[in-house]
Image (tube, rainbow, N blue to C red; front, top):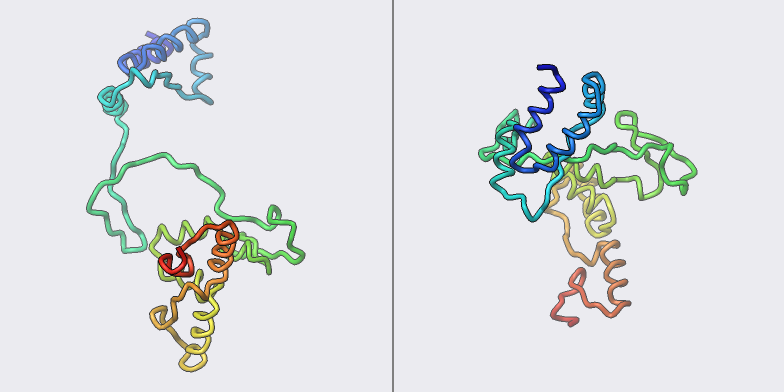
Length: 215
């Protein structure tokens, strides 16, 4: 039995239960191809599964997972916590791999003087759009840097009351803690601006004020 026949048999054994249509599609396709062409096909292609949502069941999916020996759950290792392992297993899901920096060459043209960070090639300039990107926030949150994010997004961002208190403490004793800083939403420029937009549309929010006082 040649490799072409082995591939067709693997497809039949693996996918017949969940999708006979898929098996027939590939049998018809490969019947018109030589063994070399079939092998060359899989250099740049995978098997696509054609299923009817009304006919497929969870049991069939589970059986397919077992046949293909796929890892669906596993424990997570935390490198930043000395290699500690999670107590529970978590679902393994496919995620898109994206470029996690906004390089100077593709940054907004609103900048005149653009520079980049040496280590990550992240664009930096006077524009607020490049101070802390969504990707950076997501990465920092995923590795447990919650307090760092709280500092960057509050006293070191647009919270003027917290920023003034932070600078005062640094001048007095060269250090500060987030617990010592005021946390009133009225000091956040971004919240005040967003709240004003909602109010202009006649929508009451509790971003700044107590909802019971304005509704």
